[in-house]
Amino acid sequence: MRHKGIITTLVCVLVVLSGIAAAAGIFSDGGPGTYPHETIRGGTVEIYGKGVYRHMPAEVAIQGIAQDWVTLLVGIPLLVLGLGWAWKGSLKGRLVLAGTLGYFLVTYLFYLMMAMYNALFLVYVVLLGASFFALALVLLSFDLDRLELGFGRKPPVGLAGGFLIVNSVNIGLLWLSVVVPPLLDGSLYPKDLGHSTTLVVQGLDLALLLPLSFLAGALLLARNRLGFLLGPVYLVFLCILMGALTAKVAAIGLGGGNIIPAVFLIPGTLLVGVAACVRLFGSLEG
Image (cartoon, rainbow, N blue to C red; front, side):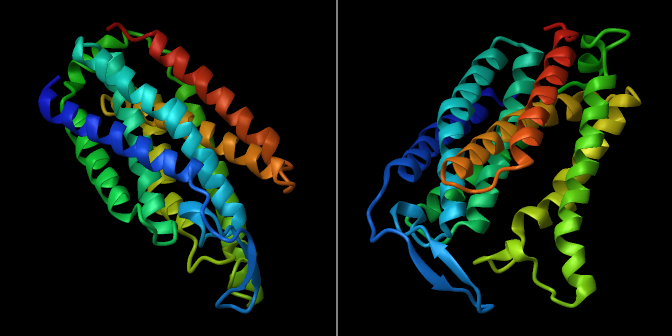
């Protein structure tokens, strides 16, 4: 793997700072507790009122804490494992490292754009920058010809490629069902907007992440060289992200919120993603 020193340094920065950020999100609890707040659009939202997420809506804050647990218990160990594996020259290790870096990139992009300003702002800035440059260097280190050969003559791309395409279409339709009806009936603002100024997750998903998932799946099904890079990397990223979403659903349920049908759909998607990932990686030598 080229640029080992720089990548290792960036990963170490990610491990330390994401550990600090996640621990702060989980364990900080100073503040008055929940209280109602009138939004700019005249609605009422319950503010969390504790810790670094004290100014965020309570429902969003508990989801952030759930994701912090996943980052701490899954993301960071995978980052370390992937780096160690990649240092040994493993293609699988580099793909795991790249996918995990993708998770950190998207996570702290959302934290930087969605979280109410707090004491961790500069930490989020560094985490976003470190994950972006580490991911770029890891992706640029691949020899696509060698990677394609590593998957053998008949790699099992059907499940992985199909999953990436179907997932992108399903989530895209879900987000459009949130955005389009208010535009058509003249109410303009989706009810899920709440305390936020705009729909950050839906916007970035529709503009970047879902098209990338569709493209990765299509290239993988076509057995294109680039697909053998984008497909596995996106699968790893998506599995970790679905793990975080599963934790968020559990947190909402424990808080008394309605989690039907998400409690079935998201863990189900996670299981299919893991199965696709295991099947595809199982065909890769090295």
